[in-house]
Amino acid sequence: MSTGEPLIVLEAVNKWFGPLHVLHDVSLSVGKGEVVVVIGPSGSGKSTLCRTINRLEPIDSGTITFDGRPLPAEGKALARLRSEVGMVFQSFNLFAHKTILENVTLGPVKVRKEKPAAARERALALLDRVGIANQAEKYPAQLSGGQQQRAAIARALAMQPKALLFDEPTSALDPEMVGEVLDVMTSLAREGMTMVVVTHEMGFARHAANRVIFMADGQLVEDAPPAEFFANPRSERARDFLSKIL
Ligand code: ADP
Ligand code: MG
Image (tube, rainbow, N blue to C red; front, side):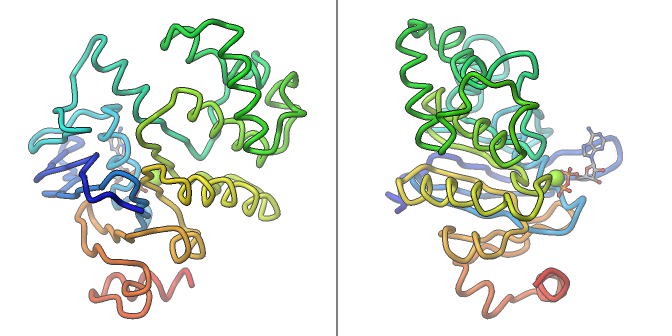
């Protein structure tokens, strides 16, 4: 689905947490409409990589550009970047004291200055798209984990992002709810959303990803189409990792 035009570009990115070199000369280009799955052992830097892309984490060297512009460090430009790069976390991160509908309309009204009635109408359409329109007036705790994560995806989509980052979106879910969230993500991928997805769901990687990236110790070790990666991982570390999770 990629148009070939780059949307997210990292060049020689390095980041340390104190003495820990957590991103090591990471270079990566994600084209518009492309779906990139990031896999790798715990602690390899996958979450940090995601967080640098919407500048939840600053980097120490290298460059990151989004849609042709360097990432802004602060102010309105940073707020705009954050609205253009949606993020979905393992832990849903919905506002507990707001209804599902309020969770989805808050950003569009406060940040995008949409009229409340218009934001509400779009939010209801998005909740319908992720299959939980009938949960709009409930509070997060009244929903199952799978429903909450679908609400979090609707909330991210409500900002009309140019890209979505997913950090282990199904890892906190009971097994029977994983499929409903992956189905929503798969349909977004098919519709051409640019996505970076950290996940251990290899079925999703095989069927929805254009590329699989394998990270280890802060380095991007492999970057290949899923069929090629799964059939013939080139590095010993990737083979070892796959043998443990497949
Ligand atoms: P992954 O998502 O692949 O499990 P992370 O990006 O979360 O890896 O973490 C990479 C490494 O950086 C780990 O060793 C982790 O302990 C460390 N780390 C992550 N966040 C911080 C932080 N805020 N301060 C210090 N170390 C951190
Ligand atoms: Mg992580």
